[in-house]
Length: 193
Image (cartoon, rainbow, N blue to C red; front, top):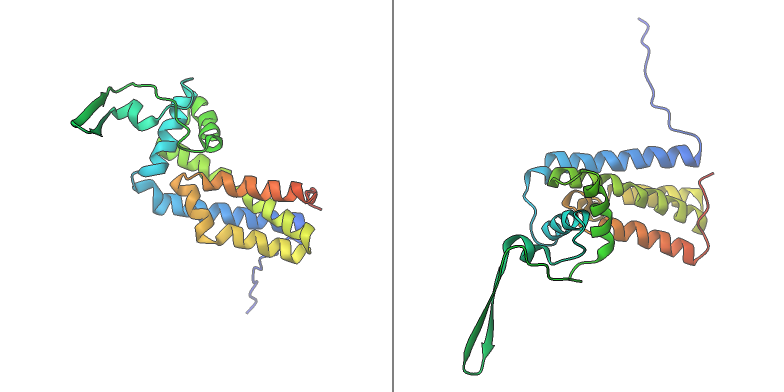
């Protein structure tokens, strides 16, 4: 009996291994999106980012998205009674309530036609991949290739990192940008070998 076994061969270079780890991270994020996040409605900050990105893509800047789409009723306590202020739907009230980097990134994709929640979640998942790559490169430059690969693996599979991507939270951009800024500050950004 002659059996031929198939063996998975890992890449031999740092660059190849980092690419494989990044693919693993994308699969984890996509699985979370398809199996869990896609069926849950957005709320809170995630809903605000989604709505604000679409407003930004429409050229409306950075208005408070909930007031624009739903209006508001504010009750202001006064000494002699309450003052009730009604804000109509479509009200453009500039807001700095959420960091503009994430709104701008999602807004750029909304401008290209990615305006639904699921489309923007998929964009968010893809935008989570650079954090894996940057963390791997930074770990390699700080210590060694082994540390770089371990850092990339942790970034690829650690739930408190990838869960933000499917939920469309600003941490997706913050982790990648924070890693990049740390590397730039230390002068340690170099292309993969």
